[in-house]
Length: 282
Image (cartoon, rainbow, N blue to C red):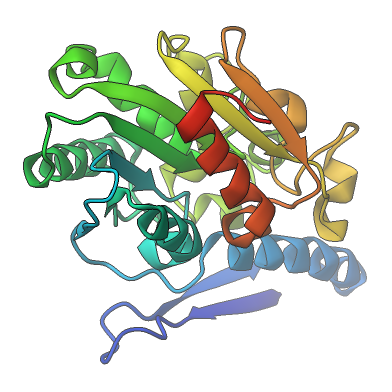
């Protein structure tokens, strides 16, 4: 029997309520252990990439009236508002009003996650001066959450003067990582959403209608060594470049960044500001 214990710690928490562990048990013969250790190591690295110190709190608003335009920022799976801080600070320093979502994803169902996002987006609108334009920026799953919200609330486009949407590393056509490990129990421990990010017709990305609003898409092409064999095309370590694209996208740019580092890359924030200002990547 091979037993692997995965412990996770919220370093931002002053207590242990958000700490815990997963235990994975695999009963096998001694001859299979080496193979399984390699496979499980792969899963652990994926888990580490997804689950980085979540901070469970409400949406947070920062205001600077130089531009008066509003931006709702949405993080990806297993992440938190703090992980979008570099981008948010760049937006604030340029004069945008920002509202950053803080929603739970690990171990949650797709419907539960959607409900959290809807509530927090609506809360953002309550804090904004809605006489000015509002834009959305989403990383990875955050982009799909934007698409889901606007598909279910199309009247908000005019009511809240929604203008531009920017997606970074969003699996708009799903990710083969989710496909490859759909049946693996340790991957399933991350929750229903991790398994819904695949490329099947019933998965989240395939269930969403094409956007009918201005969309700028940023894709990374810097792969991770640990996931390299899961792809046969350019990718950012978790999402293929081709999967980020949409038929009616407003503009597209491919950069030499990986899935995680695009959130803290100066070139990325520069292109975000370009798109917000000009409606295209320069």
